[in-house]
Length: 389
Image (tube, rainbow, N blue to C red; front, top):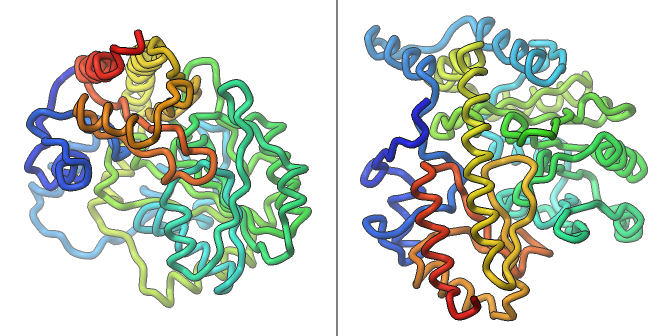
């Protein structure tokens, strides 16, 4: 659990570091990668040991008997989230972007509308549009630096062409952990407009002290239209395994999803199955507890450092390792903010407009990296805005 160790990820086929120069013009030799949502930490030893056992065996054939894997998922959801999962309800996909695409295909038709509460994870809109569906943006309300829903406004937007709503819970990029009342509001909205509700809960284990994630499946009156999406990949930094879970309890919804997966011949890779089984364990739980404490320290460092710049405000984060920072108060154009952060400071971060309506003045910073690197980023960005101080 040495989260302070600086691990060199350059020249390892690492999207976050090796594509930084091509996409941002920032050299990995001198810059800081704070964009792609993975961590610069090794996963728990249990995961490494599971892979080593595979390597020692040396034969990589088809995986058989998923029972331990499914039971590990059920144990984790019960132990960490108070959610009793029937193991027969679990579908394994190639990550949750793949799961999103499958859900859109299974439950909507070309031309149908899919509702997003924006700003939100950019892959949703990209996937929806690629499938020939229409993105319906329902902007969140930024109430003094805290995102909230406005269901009356969303009700007025609906035309009847919408067939699905995708919720990001906890929210990426704003970091909100939705309350039970807010989740009930989403469920009621979905029922009023006869929408399938897809709840992406990939960040559900990465929650700051004082906040508790509530799985959407624990909300009343939604089970017959609910598709749950979870994964171990964000929690344990194993995104390269491309493995995620879709958990569906309603028999009709389950059959439609199962038929689509069967028709596409989708099955998981054995490496991911072994990694997840090992991660969802008491050892993995202890590692996550330590990780969350470390991330909370990084969060405070980044939020306080950037919010000290006049006109800059980091949204108070309740979950994830992704800080959503508003530069509107500087009065600078989007291009000028980018120039100072990316070109001058050498920090590669996500551009807010890619997350949809409401993200225009923001940038997203990934602080799941050793604390010394977070401090370096704060120092660089502060220097880039020194004329305001």
